[in-house]
Image 1 (tube, rainbow, N blue to C red):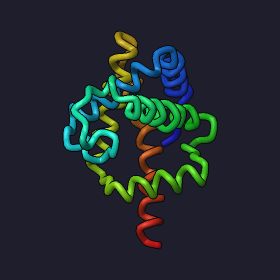
Image 2: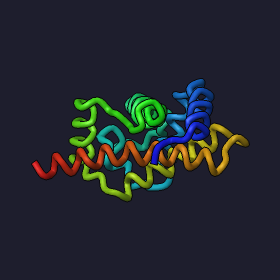
Image 3: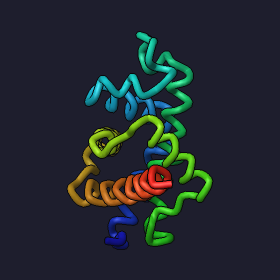
Length: 157
């Protein structure tokens, strides 16, 4: 399913609003991942042996911004422009490789999706509606599908 004009507007408007606070929203996003699935902490080398709060961990802060901004949210914008999430081949190969190496499975993708949707909902407040949830869900599902396809291709190689 492609984005409708209305979904595009919802995602773009919410993204433009959220871009004003990327560092804080990124940390919230990762905090939600760890709240939903505490065992996810073991998937990140910079968190494994740390009892530090996420907001005090500089490596987590950098990773959170990268994942939240570049991978997740900007991919949503591409859906309408290109009709699909287009991640550069080198980036996609890297994402597939690292996700395969970390043994990321379907339930992990669902945790990240839930954290993303909760983050967007919190950030947009009373603007959050079912239509916005559907638009962000579609964007994330497209990105997750692209990463999973690369994981399967690498695993088969």
